[in-house]
Image (cartoon, rainbow, N blue to C red; front, side):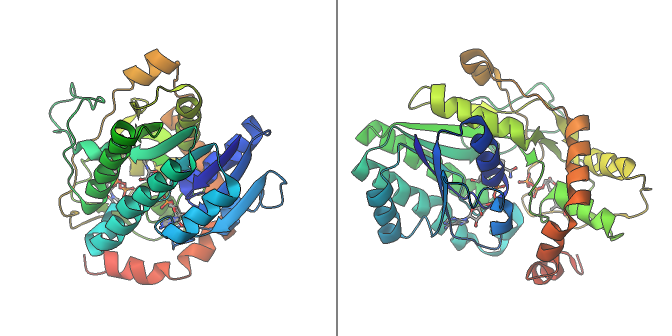
Length: 339
Ligand code: NAD
Ligand code: TYD
């Protein structure tokens, strides 16, 4: 099987490529990635020389380049991880999110239509459902929950989902969509909560918590997300949406406390900063459908996953030090100084 993986130099796509190279060595993977600030070719260093792997630098919204690639490679499967993925950045520059997340998706769908594929899989997010109140722990997102987005990021991801379903209904493109909760693990860009807190703690810098730290996220170890996507692509029903999550809800403060405890550090470095605009209160996935239909269950619990993640950041300092010493410094100052 020939698979185009977009956004494979990013966090989840990179993990997906590493895991799939081991799980399905017979497959050929072509990674299409624009190498934005979030893409890091070093993430793919181990697979770069493999005969069944190819890296192509390119923008998913570049119609001519995408069509050329499809004409040349004639992929069986396309898995679209490529996106602008950070909510805070979507507050600074919404238009970029519309360009990559919506226009980029439409270009890929058109190429799938033109060249014919066995499956197009859209990697989406639980953020398309909006948020849940903090005082209703009985509520969860199901696949039937209406789309009700809060940020330019989630609005762009929801728009892309609607396009994907439209191409299924109208043109018969064989699609699936997965909507996963927050991921964590190796190769996670240190602008997101967990890697940012680990890196700041390792550098003895303040740990900025938005608002009171009461917002809740449903954390999933990235490997479990990747195995769920693989299962959906190979055995999921065309035209369907699958939620992915493992009932690992934590407040942001609990997450930060767990990281500090694991590192043997006190909590004096925690600092509470101005809240994020439109900050979603709680995300919580009901994964019943994927469990019943495809037999998927997460393997790694939060305690084990956070230990593994911290160890990875301690043993891969060069990977993140190159990032935090570069352009990221400007972003960090704009986002956090004087907040
Ligand atoms: P990421 O920001 O770490 O990586 C995104 C990758 O896409 C980078 O390699 C970047 O270079 C590439 N990219 C960006 N714009 C591109 C373009 N126009 N053309 C080609 N490549 C481009 O993101 P991530 O956290 O790995 O997320 C991957 C996908 O999973 C996204 O679609 C995101 O919405 C979704 N998702 C993420 C999470 C999470 O917790 N991180 C949870 C659920 C769903
Ligand atoms: P993030 O990792 O950006 O993911 P998302 O907003 O897509 O869920 O943030 C996770 C949670 O952590 C979210 O409630 C915002 C909060 N947060 C902080 O409190 N401080 C920070 O510096 C960051 C980046 C996030």
